[in-house]
Image 1 (cartoon, rainbow, N blue to C red):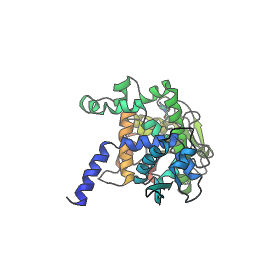
Image 2: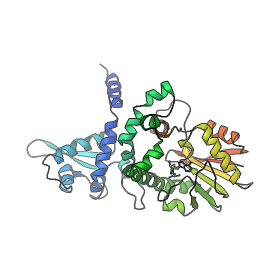
Image 3: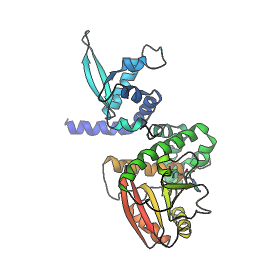
Image 4: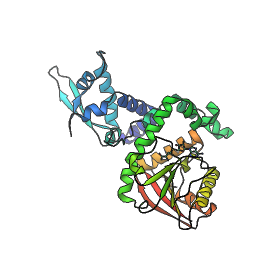
Length: 327
Ligand SMILES: C[S@@+](CC[C@H](N)C(=O)[O-])C[C@H]1O[C@@H](n2cnc3c(N)ncnc32)[C@H](O)[C@@H]1O
């Protein structure tokens, strides 16, 4: 059997239980593993015995179990690892941070992806995913099929999930806006209102250049030179996206613009992590809320249907794009 065939088989198996990565990542965050390794200093590596000694446990097997978890994360390039020979002829692995794990550490300003696995691993999310096949056959949104209410209504009734959701949105926003503002200058010199934001959800970084206003986008959109829709349109189906954009149109002055920030779906086949991530996000939005990630062609169609004269793809950062719609 060729190495290639073996790898293809292994890939097929890994895809069947890729949830294992989510769950191990979540447990690593809960145990502060990335933080403990980070405290070893830049490029530092630590054994799982050292990590276990920092945890509130007397479990004699903690270090062995941690080693198995961190070995898995190493093989997903979250961690680096070197082998250290022991006197008894065995080895121990020493772990350092890999490039991906830096996103799971707090960046000093509240930016981090650490709360993301808590949403993906939540029982309610799983119950909704288990209805995906029914949505194909019968229509409807998986989350509503499982719970009889939307993902947002459910989150309001589950305080722990709600906290994780807000932390995940804020942590992500701080990371993302920091990167975006390095390259995108479209907020400068204009009064931008940020709509579709709950109290405590937005980052202090983005609040330095935009105003945040509460209220339903389907009822009234506040006035501003520009209206920011960040991670809003991907929550809704095409018809609702056009409704929201029409309400924004009516709230804008003649020279106004809408700034959409969302994932950008590429239309063709693409095996990059970016495209994988956007297709994952696309189906996650569908499963929980009935939403979708738009392609450039779809954003252009929304713009036209809502009456805008023009649009442009203005910038991209961390897999999300900025699309500006002009009145
Ligand atoms: C994915 S979050 C994005 C939040 C924020 N814009 C950000 O980028 O961090 C979507 C937000 O839309 C809000 N939302 C849901 N339905 C809404 C509605 N009808 N009008 C306004 N906001 C709504 C939710 O409460 C949630 O805060």
